[in-house]
Image 1 (cartoon, one colour):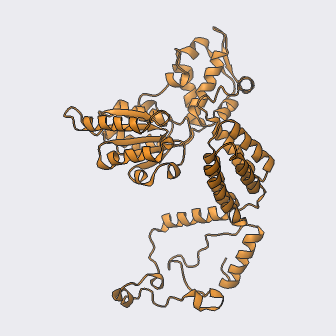
Image 2 (tube, rainbow, N blue to C red):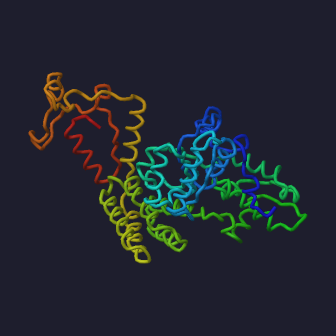
Image 3 (cartoon, rainbow, N blue to C red):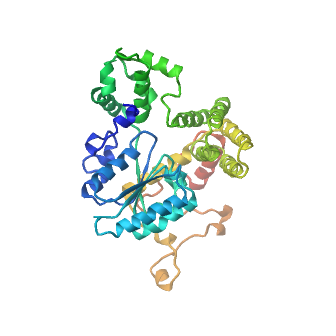
Amino acid sequence: MNAPLAERLRPRSLEDYIGQTHLVGEGGVIRRMIESGRVASFILWGPPGVGKTTLARIIANTVSVPFYTLSAVNSGVKEVREVLEKCRRDGGSMFTSGRPILFIDEIHRFSKSQQDSLLGAVESGTVTLVGATTENPSFEVIRPLLSRAQVYTLRSLEGEELQELLDRALTKDEVLRSHGVEVEQTTALFRFGGGDARKLLNILDLLEQSTPPGEKIVINDKVITERLQENPAAYDKGGEMHYDIISAFIKSIRGSDPDAAVYWLARMIEGGEEPEFIARRMLILASEDVGLANPNALLLANATFDAVHKIGWPEGRIPLSQCAIYLALSPKSNSAYEAINSAIAEVRESGDLPVPLHLRNAPTKLMKDMGYGRDYKYAHNYPGNFVIQQFMPDQLGHRAFWQPADNPAEMRSAALQNERWGKKG
């Protein structure tokens, strides 16, 4: 009974697994793979405590193939090569029924050379890769490896799922049952849990450990808040608090509060957060939240990322602070973010609409004879380097995806566009 509650309650089958119904529910892609026993390489991307490692263990329990695990925290290139050699031997054995599976936890922590050492085995089919990461694979996983593995996104647990988890803990765990538990309120418990199953169970662990034997455990908002204030790290054993703090940091910058931004930056620095992680998040924010209201923000954020990468700690804190303050003080606009989302939604709705003939490339005589490039107007041949012509597919006409935000820079650009295109926009 010394194991943490999260480990005691870890599901062993899909029937016991809570959440991620879009992947493991009836007809879900991962459920279909597990039930068929034919697992293709994939990467699980999601916040902590949502079931990435558990899902990998369920695969190991279910499919009849050799299953190996590596943690990026304590595995180097040597360990990777040793495991791959075992996979090659197992894959060629007459006693195995399928390709070995290699599960890599925290794959985002693997260096480029470590990921390169995996590529050949994945490409040749020697091994099926299942990775887990809390970071965006687009940034952290090399492109050749990413192209050979599907990425499945896991979501934070929601209210009903957290309630199901709580009910299971109270009815299935012998330690909690030996105390007896009285649930009066769950608002604070679920709020501090933050959609993270492990965090919620760690809070229950804390309550159990701080309750004398034989005494009933009481769960209400007052008790939860008091216990966590007494021991604020108790529900954060895996270091997940950085997700809460980076959220506060980003929202402070978005809300134009430079002092709060610097405070949360200091919290991350003192907590040992990786400087590149902080710089990368500001790089995203510079486009998503500042955007066209101050295009120079993206340049400064990119320069900050480069500077931090070059100089490291402790001096890296200075450009990080400069960038955070600059972004917080900048005017804000998410019009570029909204524009691309709107355009992507249109593409998904209308499909691959044909390119108008006058915009098509015409490198051969046959293509010219077919009308490719005919009547295209070269903008630089016209006054002001602008001429009205159709650029959208015929079916979309003059569809406007970019809606200018209310700031001087975009208002000037919008006025120029309206002047050029007449009634457009």
